[in-house]
Length: 444
Image (cartoon, rainbow, N blue to C red):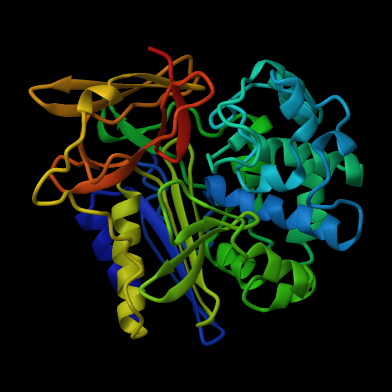
């Protein structure tokens, strides 16, 4: 497998500072590294370099929860309040109804998709975070829709702390990382500094790869996105789900994690399992998760029926393009169908849809999306609101209808970039917008 050559060429061609990749096939792991960890220092990326894996962390947190299920300490349909009696969001009924399963499957419905809160660096950070959720409104009822929710995994982290009597970082290390032999994986900055570590890069004053002003998210985001690891360690983690849990997790939980719990809005072949994103692509069953932090993007996909897993960890805005090159190379080399997702294309004849009914301002925590109509065409503009991190929203996106519910956003090249769903009105008669994996309500 020409993994090193492909990664080196992709990093150069896509203008990415650096990347590391690893592939599992026939029980063997192939590794590659290219570029630099930090444009300011010029230190090379090596296979033993740690990158932030962002939301891939969620599958690790889900694994800890499933261990507690295996041990009989937690049940998936336990109300969160069984373990965290003081848990509450703004809706009193939802506070009672939200379960562990809702959190694992992003179906709790409260507006925590991007609720970031600095609870300090102490071991009480997650306790402080959970207490800070009290004012978050419900966008949908519990269990109604899948809508990506970072806050839900921080709540799961707090449940793990209470049940195990360990802070999340310690529970992760002692119950998962050490037994699985993941000795190049860490969460706390003081531990990551013992390794070669990547810095994030974002578009900015110094060009497309400007060093990010902040290295890591707040500690309260730990169970949702703070793991740092080598590509090989990420593959070793994924291997647990290809080999009956590796003695860390029961075969029953490995199977349960890969069973669809709820379909994504507007989709028929993309679902959420317990932590994993489940997709059928060209007839192949895949389990996957991506992650993004402050200038670092991580990608993990596994084919359980083929015993194949691919990870690519990157430290710049073009990481997604490098990932596409890597995964396409792997599937081609192994004689497998492409894993590239196919987005719907606008029909040759536009459907008869009253575009004016979609116009408005849609809000969710940290993001305001405005849909405007000009010369018979819709445009979606996204802006960040009250976010403490250095983030740049995408440029305005033209959106065109596939049908009355599903639209497609077009990229700068005029090709489909992502789908946009306008869902049934809420209890107040306002349509809801599903965009960038999150639900938002129309407020104007």
